[in-house]
Length: 152
Image 1 (cartoon, rainbow, N blue to C red):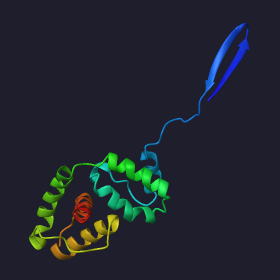
Image 2: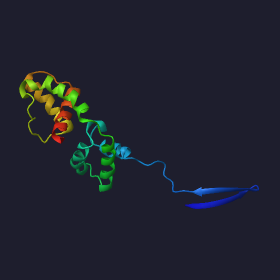
Image 3: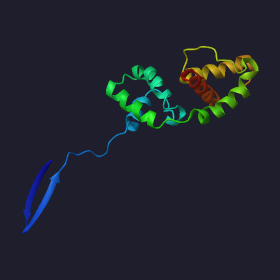
Image 4: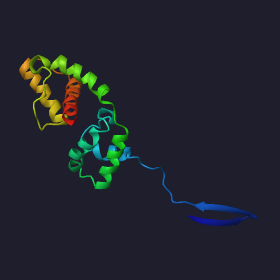
């Protein structure tokens, strides 16, 4: 901290120069900047505080995050995580409505697909097997349901 005095027109003005920072980024800006390069940003409430660190272990290398960036984004996501029962309630309903005829409520089959790849696969799978169109928003929710069950 520096203290400076100026004299002008007979007045003494005291100015304290503090280190300047416009605002402290809580990780949200960095999250938007780094993660939106590859995909639509998930709402931080779409995973719980316990799930976000697991997801960041998968995504940080893909995004080439530095350890500091990873830590900052993870802290932001954990602090804004949602509640699992609320997150999965609608997803379970959509799974029962669209998938349980063939898959019942047993564990989902393993896959390495995630995000848009899984969403596209689900749309193609339903069209191929059930001869029906699976709306994009429903496929998105079902892909998230798969992720949520995988991260539990």
